[in-house]
Image (spheres, rainbow, N blue to C red):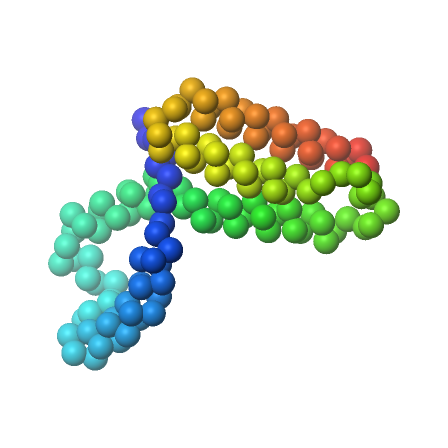
Length: 136
């Protein structure tokens, strides 16, 4: 049985990897032969196996949020202004908030509340799709 792990990436570490890490990788590639190639997994097979399993069983929270927001933006651009009623607010923000609250509950070991929220998100998404199909 596999379980999903939510990765909580740090903004500080992400920026460090993007800017400082890029330059150190370039320097190491120029100095160390074979650095950064796919054959590096032969040198550390345990690390390669661990990373492969970890990235397949874990979920990146930034990617989930970005996917939810881009799907909402695609729906907004595909619909015309006549389909949108003036009194309705964007449900993308609600989805975003529910996902964040669920991630916080999972990290604080409140699994029952997190499961209830996941069911609520699923119900909300299904009803949103039904309403979109009825409008077309």
